[in-house]
Length: 497
Image 1 (tube, rainbow, N blue to C red):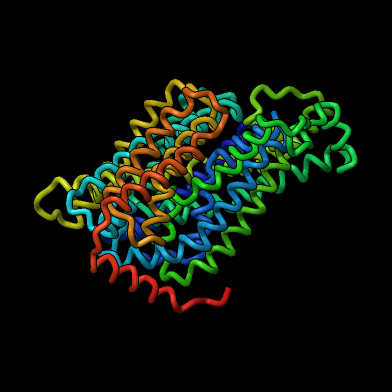
Image 2: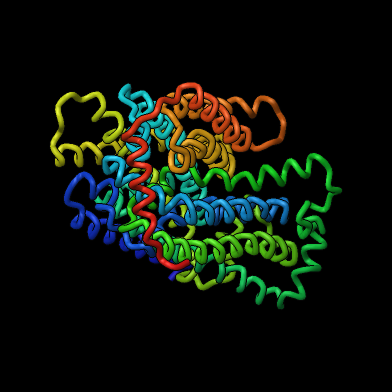
């Protein structure tokens, strides 16, 4: 049996497993709220692992190891920033968002929560936030489609477009019918596969090279700057800007709809504590594994003299060189899992934006739950098709596509989510102005050529404008005060930290 046959067998088993989970989820999805939020009964372990898997995507197993392979530890500052941001998100945002969304008219999407929380009768806030979600998520899903095509091209010598089509079809097959629960449960399996691959592959590479003692000389030969946290250069203004920009990635967590929607699906605010512990353990191990994969991969290819055409495929190529083909196939499936987990979660959020936050706004009569569920599935299909068409001709790196979409959500939603949860004086006009400011800065900042990641100025711009406009337009609302107090009461019962 050829190596390629083993690889295809492993991938077939993986695909079948994902579809089986989707079928299970579909049988347990009875209405529109189940389809969009799993009935607010997602176990903490599932919320934690699905949030991590949907967050990291192909960036974790392809983008980050590739960046470390090229630039060294200076790009590990991104991992540091993300880890800090994720911890703060779980610690402060998760329990309060879970409580507040239930208090505020049982909101099941971020746009509906902002409208209900800020008592926006104009519906503008809900519409604008939904449009922002659709624009940036289409770009985000596009990055996943590109990663899928690159995956098949690098791993099987297959056609890029065939790989793109396979990823799109299989991901759709379990997301279309399983909805939020299907995306979350497949994320759990995919997250565990990702973490295992990122720990096993570099460990085997180290053994193959003869131990850690051989890593240092190989990296020194490739370039000693790879082991320097500032890239081996003097700590100049440019280096400091680069580090600050990398750390700024952590600010993006507060505004990622596909991540924070997991907080809303928890069975209670107190469940966020155990979810945080599980999620941060997974994230810490996975991040460390990804960074080591980049460094060890560089040493491996330097010492063995093997060529690597695309640095973002370092994990894929090492797995095929070091493992039995059937095991390598499951490692490759783990890489594919990283890509598909994010696509599925983002498709569900896009569907909710189209159905819950746009369709229901413009339709005058209340549609039936069955009608909404069918429409939600149709929207999942439509967004996937658009993203796939955009990915036919890839025009950026995976990391580049992800970084832009991440900045868009972090800048437009991050400050608004934080202010809506912790500052009762936020107004819908302040939220609208801040959201628009953040989105515009992200789209235009790159033209200035400052070298600063657009998320940082976008986040700060949104925050400042939202506060200034809110102070200028604030009128006391007793319903807002009452809901703010009710949320505080729900959070008084705490599980010991």
